[in-house]
Length: 428
Ligand SMILES: Cc1cc2nc3c(=O)[nH]c(=O)nc-3n(C[C@H](O)[C@H](O)[C@H](O)COP(=O)(O)OP(=O)(O)OC[C@H]3O[C@@H](n4cnc5c(N)ncnc54)[C@H](O)[C@@H]3O)c2cc1C
Image (cartoon, rainbow, N blue to C red):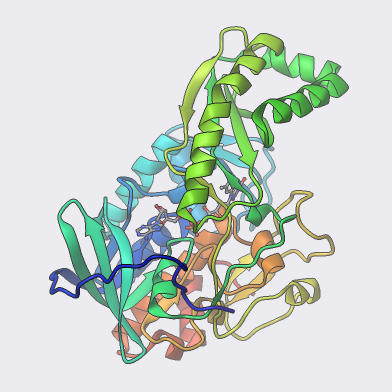
């Protein structure tokens, strides 16, 4: 457990200064990724005056800017709404075509540009005030109570004040600066410890490639190993997003999502590897003869970093035992289906509301991959639909706290669960 620390070395003193209060709202959400956009839309739909502060110029976080396009294992709730809207405009590619009652589908590949537009429309329609190109830098804390945030933008350093602040930055930037306890240790074998810079190759002939891959599985595996050698890190290609597009994922170990030098290293090294990797596929892979580099993620792929120490810390043991709680505000249908996580995990695991509530600070909630969890619970349950579930719970709780003039930790679990059920969230 740690509090925010100063890097050792040379320091300078930043002079204190008075800054402009740019806006005030009832609910202020920082970070517009899957958790944050959902929290903001939900809080606004529940009647709260809501501002969403996002450092980039679009919404969706990893699901759009990070080119993390595979959304799987999701429960009904707002992820379903994304899918319904995406489907209408041809932006959801159903890989498995599996449909089960209560859990719409597995493995949908989404179109990131259409998803950006859909999330923008959903936020506009809900009445969320968006503050884009605005980087939340510090929490404003008075007597243990988080009152707002300071943000930097082209207009300089300003403040936004709110009654409830939701940290949906993924990395817990707000709660760390507010002085909350957090944990940022991650087992290096876990998915959540690896960074990535995703890019895509377009113009492939998928049928030719698929025939080659199924006729030559060993050769394809050897080629994948060779690509890893060329890149200098593990490359995870997923040739199924669209018939003409190949999605190139990466797993870069021993780098931290909250160290600027590591973020720079990953960005520069993957970009340096992009052309040789692409040239390898183009020269050596049947179906890639007319291919080209389609795009690269504008947002670096960060899978895990700081985790809040909340009123409750969800653990590996809870998941194995499928522990029941009074304050379940979401159900995670299934853990991450990769070999990079421990086995023996249960399906339909309940998320307690207390995992979103800091152990000590008032006026603050956290949602998304920084939720209060141990390393294992986090690596299993921090993917997009899970983060949407957390955002929906945090947004609803924040609106209830504002309405009842109480702290988020005092929100009545029964009322919260009733509101979530009314929104279509499946709860036990
Ligand atoms: C390469 C890769 C592959 C993955 N594969 C899958 C997969 O197949 N399926 C799946 O469901 N999940 C997958 N994930 C995990 C998933 O993408 C993330 O766990 C999920 O997006 C987390 O959502 P979030 O809202 O908590 O955070 P993020 O998506 O990281 O969103 C955080 C948002 O906050 C903004 N922000 C951050 N700091 C600040 C600040 N200080 N001020 C203002 N704004 C800020 C960011 O710009 C961003 O918009 C993958 C992740 C990666 C990196």
